[in-house]
Each structure stands twice: as C-alpha cells, then as structure tokens.
Length: 504
Image (cartoon, rainbow, N blue to C red):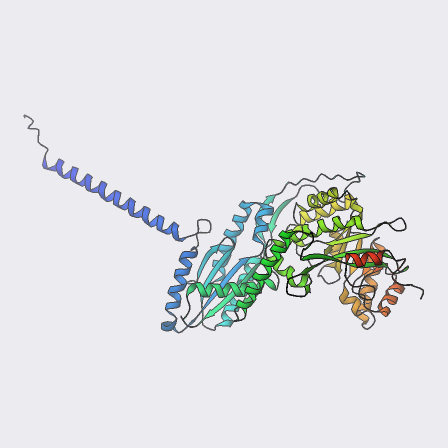
C-alpha cells in the first residue's frame, strides 16, 4: 500500500482530544491556582484561620442576619497577654507554636458553626450565636480563658550567659546551670460585645470589643470584660496617658522633666536613725496634680513603656547618689522597685552596671525590691538576674510579703534575698487584729531565723511603731516617720542624727 500523506480519522480525533485535554488541564490548573491564591489572601498562613479581612466580612454577614434570625451575636476579642515578651524571651519559633496552639484551643472551645479568626499578631476574634446574650458570652469567655491557660509544651532549651563579675569577685549566691523549659504557661485577656441589632458597622463592633479589652487588661492578666458605653472614654484616657508618658520619658531627667523620684526614709527602729530610702516614681503631669505609679503604671505595663521607666529610675537614682553624703562612716542604701518585665529581661544587669559605671558607684549602695505577687514570664532569667545582682553586692528585698499565695515557697525560690518587707495591710491591723498581729509576729520570726532583715511598711502610728519594736522588727517606713519626699528635703532628714528618739 502506498502512503498518501494524509492522517487517518482516528489520528485526527486523538490529536483533537489531546489538545482539548491540554486546554482543559491548563484551565483547571489556573482555576485551582486562583482558588488557592484567593484562599491564601483571606486566611492567616500560620494558623490557617480567617484573617482580618475575611473575619470582618463574616461578621458583617452574621450581623445582616440578626433581624431575620432574632438571635443575638457574641463578638469576643482575645488577646494573648505579653506575647511580645514570649517572642523576645524564647524566640519567634516558640511564639509561632504558641499562636498555633491557641488557635486550636479556641476552635475547640467554641461550637460548630462559630467563627474564629486571627486579626493581628497576638489577637483573635471569635463570633458566635448568643441566645442568652451576656450569659452565653460570659460562658464562652470562661471556656476560652481556661483553655488558653493550660500549659503549652514547647521543649525549648535556653542557653544563657551566666558569667558573673564584681569588684570583689565574690561568687554567685546560687549556681544555676543550663535548663530546658518544656512547658510555657500563658494567659489571655478578653473584651466582648453582644450585638442584637445590625445598626453598627463591623469595624465599630470590633472597636467596642477593643475598648472592653482595654478595661480587661487594666484589671490584670487573664481577665474578661463586657463592653460598656463608658469604655470608649476610658480607652481614650489611657491612650492620652500613654502618649504623655512617652513624651515625659523621652525628655529625660534634666531640668524641666515631668518625672521625678521621691524618697521615703527607712529607719532603724531601735535607734531612730535613717539607714536608707525607697525610691518612688512620681509624675508631675502638666495641668494635673502630681500622681503616683497607681495612675500610670498599669498603662505603662500594657505598653512597651515600663522597661523605659525602669531604666529611667535606675539612671536617676545613680545620678543622685553623689548628693548623698557619707554619715558616721556609712552610706544610705537606696532601694529601687523592679517591674516583672525588666526582672525577667536579660537587659537588667547590663543596664544597672552601665549606670553604676557611669557615675562610678559601688553596687552595695543599691538595693532592689521584688514584689511577691508579681508574675514574671521568664522566671529562670529573673533568678539569674537576682543572683548576679546579689553577687555584685546589691541587697535584694521581698516586698509586700504575705499577700501572695505561696509566701514560703517564694522565700525558698528567692533565697538570695537579704530583707523581707512586711506588707502594709498587716501592719495597719497590727494593734487591732489578732490575726494581723500573729502574721506580723510570724513574719519577723521567720526573717530572723533565715538571717533576713525585717522591714515593716506603712507604719502610720506611734503605737504601731512601739509594737514593732517590742516584736523585734529591725526597720520601718511609713507616714509616722516620713512621707515620700523630694530629694532636697529627704537629704535634710538624712543629715539629722535621728528621725525620732526611741527612748522618748
């Protein structure tokens, strides 16, 4: 048979089918790619949850159904407390694991059909039906708080620089070796809104949840708050405080500074002689009265300002040291309160040493107070820091002793401490309450048996002072002796022979 050069009908059909399959395959690939790209554009790549754009859209859809369904909606804004510190302390990989784990726990805590999304680096939004309004919303909030607070397995080893040096080369109080942190305990704060009518925009609802969240965080970590109309005013007030405080910190501690340290004398009870003082921060905010840390510290702790305040105080105390004269062969011991944030930071000791070197001061002139009830994220770093400070010669005091839930365990953990400060709430009831008197008596006895100095805080009457002397308490501070005072005035007190005559 002679070839004609023409393709057979079967061959043409095959070529046509192959071409159609290729076109169809390309179309499917393009469609699949578009679907994937669309999904990626609307979902968080780490947790796979809806991102802010998608969750806002779903909130809008849910709100549009309110009138038809006649059932209220709950919107809960969940914020991981101090997430930045987790990243800074353990690294981004651990932070990512925490986010994924929290996302999974949120999904497990809500019902099928409810929506969970990630709307920012450390915040999630939950949308759910609330047939019983606030009651259902609060129940969901409690489930979420319980779920998030369960320890998270991270298995993260953290090598740290444990080298210690001092002018007298004394060894560390505790030799801490490298440890592996297997679990991380975190908390979350929640601001919630109940919606019954679709009269607001989704962004407004989320803003209201943010206002409620601000109030929740002001109450401490791991708290839940429902939105109230006055929350918006409160969040504006807190934002104003933060902005003004940031400007005050940036100004520094020269003439015209709004920030100032006041000093409350600490007196030896047996002699009436002032031995040192506690440095207390005050803010002379323009147009307002001088305010104490109870006004601005909660705002500072929510933001990144608390570390800057700690460093400001450390530097200002060291700078003022040259104005304290040496009396009767002794220098005053000036005590500084440390926040939980800087206590758990590896920048603490370098910051203190830099200030000491700048003003050529021995570390034995500084004391540091840690509050028993403070919650430190990285306890291992905190212990390292305190042991390094103790090795340098600084004195460590446990403040507000007795108000925490594990006072005895705290003494064992912070065995480098040199002083125990008895909380003012017990001193206030010293002469009227048998229970308070028993607690103060036991605290003084415990301090004596452990070789610690006992310091009574908040002493406001002569009767309290005399009772403390009879009980064997070593030191006292309080209004009956002196209020917190500006440096110039407290220096006058330091130059006196004694604040009071213990025999008179």
